[in-house]
Length: 489
Image 1: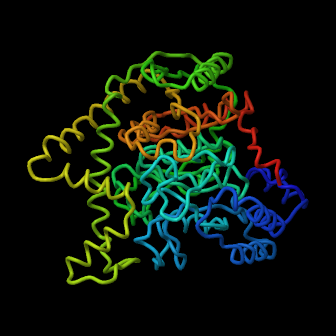
Image 2: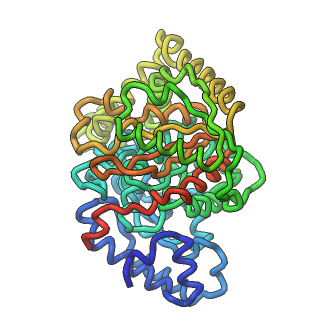
Image 3: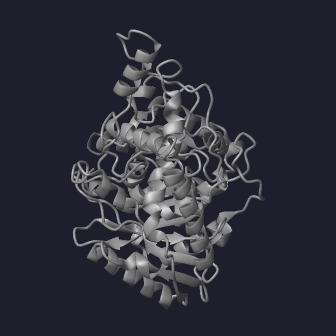
């Protein structure tokens, strides 16, 4: 059976309900697909073929448990999300051999739904990066053009979905790490409101910014996965206790009267012409659907990137202090005393980008510089949140590019960290404000690479961004574009 029959969660469920396939056939098709393309894409750090196939066979036998939409569906889990008994490395040498004794709440949620983990997805080391080139194990390639990056840090999660190696994946988003790779790989990626999805079991990069979210092929699948992973968790003190929602109930084609905010600052210098053109076409689509376009201002956006890198690096320097060769994974050999063990383990265990951010964060938190850098960054954070609150009081969602460019070449920006950081310029402010945003495909550039459109909502406004995204998806069909890698099998 061809993989094209197995595109989305809801399409697979329809085939199974009609008796046209089985869970074992579905899983076998995805395992075959991994065998065909993984050597080119390198999405995974581990593939759990035998376990997944056994679970699929059990799913066919256990007919009473098939009520969940995710039952028997193969998915990828970013390698910074813990899974009991399965090595979790954050794509870092320093966590080599770490086997978590427990699972993250989101992994438990998906296990309870019957979804099946098919692999642990590659990532930038400790989620620090915008290209997936900072993985200490191997770089993942973009399924649309393997000479290009898939984006980061959830590049493995986005690439395995785009390459049809799994039906959906979970990623984590600290400054755009779900939305940016979703844009580069032509899939849907959602960063939920901070506190909506439990972070328990997510290996922390920057605790006040990190959020787990789904990467899928369309908006309907995105809502189905969000339904399963959203909800209060007593194990996470930042988890918000609020009533669960059925996000699929907001998927409507009719958005007449919906107010969509346009930020003039987001369409200025530095935006690739093809990306600008696709976004302008998207604006026209929304007009044709009866939406009302509203000009809004985000005057502190220029300071978001600077504030982000100070806050995230400061939190990273604190969170990563625990990796010292004593409690987790890698330990250096040939040390003289305890201090020498710490130095050698951390010097040899962390990659260059991680060390760069630890040093930056430690400096920002040090005595004499705290007020000048960290405290000032927190003040800027408050101003950015106030800007978003004001803008979103004038509209239902804000429309913007997800990234200033389409996917760039492997190695093109790796020698210039500051230029690399600019690829997150439209996504970072959302994490600073803690609000939700989604990236959906809105066409291709002249080289045939995907362009992503970002829709930003109010606190817990996932219903609005999913509604706007679904209406656009139904009107345009850009989400049906597939990478040429798909045709090469």
